[in-house]
Length: 473
View 1 (tube, rainbow, N blue to C red):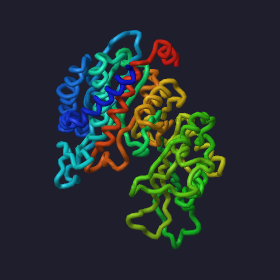
View 2 (view 1 turned 30 degrees about the vertical axis):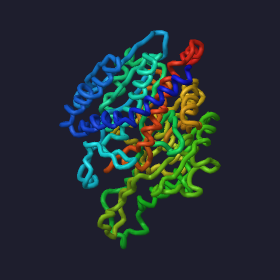
View 3 (view 1 turned 180 degrees about the vertical axis):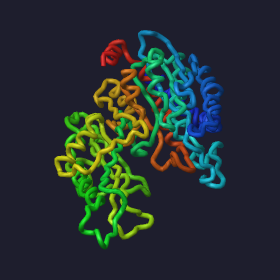
């Protein structure tokens, strides 16, 4: 009976797409011009919550609250709650309704960023994958369970943020202020691209990102290279040698304190198992670059990376024959939770002193807040429950990715709400996300609807004994 009902729920969710209902709803979401950067778009950000997504969730039996951002110049937060029983687990489903700038002048001539257009398997429009299409998949998964079972079988909260593309301004304060109504047992969100079209992903966290400027400031102005070359120190040469002690010739991090220590075995094993398929046009990894003895996936999902973002000395746009007095470079460290962000700059200062570079200044970048690193244990019972459900629905094990290479707000939710965090992306690397001609794929919408309907059905089937195990973690 339960298996038949589960299959029926999945078929119901997939039929939303086959019947055209899903695309009709997505078209209404895409039509709201929710660019998060121009201040003039704030009314559209509010309209998305008040007039489009809010009423849709209300019709599914959710209580709707729309809260102003703690930073009033930015978009609101929508919180939709469906409470069925205090004894049942609560799932927090997250998405963001804001989008990056539409850039209509860069789209193909016959496409409009704010008008959904289907061409074969592609569905064009700003937000079709980032993130309107993806959080609609989750909402429709909830809808399928409600219509099939008559209830969810668990409590659900849907949080729609309207400022993620602007760096989630106000989000952390909002979570702290509203953590009573956002309290949950697990966080689930759909965002980002899959690593492979053939394999679904569970992403458990993100890397943090830190910028540090290295500055060599030896003297005012520049001096004639004919008279002073060979006599005055060249700041660019000093800086280049300093960098060579930080990152090796083959891309290995050399700074003690920048290399993760005590990476859990479960994280290394999960990272090694991730299946990745390169897309046409994507660069191939350079052989022998990065930490030796690691697989490609371990280097991204379980390790840190350091790159030189920029270097400058003299006047690159119009070189003159003079010894400059100043050079600057910016280095970025992407790091997992196994490296403490507060230790990064002091570790570099000690490293440079130990290597004889006291004249190289270390200046941490504070121009903008960076997302902290985050990671949920791959062996967490909630992760195993979701993975088991996905395997049953998709007829194959998902990738379990401890930490994706990019950054995001995962740790805000994990620390403030105390929940395990999982991201279940339903896009692909060639979708045009953040660029012109953004599009979703019909096949991934179909996969996602089936997957989320199965997950939500299975959460509603969790036994009382299993609930105790999940809560105690």
